[in-house]
Amino acid sequence: MSNHVLSTDTQAILLLCASFGQNRQTEPQPLTLSEYNSLADWLLENQMRPANLLETTAKEQLQQITNKKLNPDRLLALLDRGAMLSLAVEKWTNQGLWVIGRSDRNYPKRLKQRLRHSAPAILYGVGNLELLSLGGLAIVGSRDIDEDGLNYTQRLTQTSAQQSIQVVSGGARGVDQAAMLGVLEAGGTSVGVLADSLIKAAVNSKYRSSIKEGRFTLVSSYDPDAGFNTGNAMGRNKYIYALADYALVVNCSVGKGGTWAGAVEALAKIKDVPVFVRSQSDSEGVSHPHVSDGNLELQKKGAIPFPSEPWSSSLKEVLATSVSNAKFLSKETVLEIAPQQVKFSSKDIYEVVLPVILNHLQRLIDTKSLADSLKVRQSQMQDWLNRAEIEGKVRKTNKPVAYVVSQDVTLNSKDIDIYEVVLPVILNHLQRLTDTKSLAESLNVRQSQMQDWLNRAVMEGKVRKTNKPVAYVVSQDATQLSLL
Image (cartoon, rainbow, N blue to C red):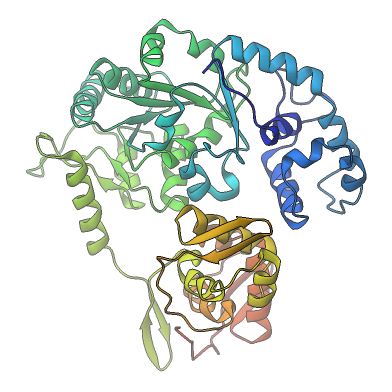
């Protein structure tokens, strides 16, 4: 994509977040993802886009920031790195790289929808950008893998290529590289999510022909010249899972290594990407000696045994059936409430608030007014609206910036306080002592918004707060719940 043109938004995000090949400790220090998210919230609240920060009025506007995480002088110094940006972009373009920001239209929706604020602000890449939207099967595993594991990976990638299933992996030595090269050699497509050395990988002879043919894409959220860093390697794991439809762990070590950490994180936080493990036994239940103990432990944490060979029928259908069976066999979470028991399955908060939001969007309304009406934080409401827009449930207008329910959505909700809807879900998760951050991550909601709800539940006597540690548990006095 040598003709790739940076949007003005992406130019601004690069100025704020990119290191341009320098040590990230060099002054001024680029924004971390957390810091950029804080700035993005401020931009939304002020009805601005990143591109507005390049305008002449930006200096005056940035001085109005009161968030302690954001130093206006630091932001201005970062935005003043225009010469560095020009040199870096010229270098990247000459080497065939492209860059997209989180506000770009062609930024992968899967990352936004599944990771929310954990989605990287910037993506660097080389190859067919459209592959990032095709999903597929993520195949990951340890760097150290025996011949049996490599042969298994190769057989699976050949089947994937034959059935037009894209393979997503991490590019590391061992299973990752075997998976990518295996599917490419069989004529399929692949996406490699790298933690380092994107520029070197882009010219690697093993990949170059597949990149030119449009069958292979390399992508990274880190500077294209960045060397290996353990933290970066751990951080990119979630992107591998989020870009796929299903994931398979071929092998891993119990409690250590990036493969284990990535799988555990995916099982806990990326609920709509089923995680499979290479099964410890064949179709007749005979133990397989080559499968690692880590796979068994992941299975205890919720991973699903990968279907046994041969995969002669549709692998997609076999995987979908395995997921359905696993859900059917799993136990529902049961909330005990005197004098009766109420079954209430664990849910993403978004699923229960969406009908209420849609009911309020029968006329055009802006984010702030909607948030005020439903008594939630504006930043949280914007997250939900962004997701609903991606899913086609709401339609956004630009002048004014506002939202309305899509014409093909059926409304069946009553006008109620959002808190009344989410309270049963929160209480269901508070059967044991839980801190605010863990609860917010579990239910896919902002920590600040969760804290608001917990404070209200404490005041109403529904939830009890402990001080050492600061955590919450359902109150024994909460004997009645509204399960709207």
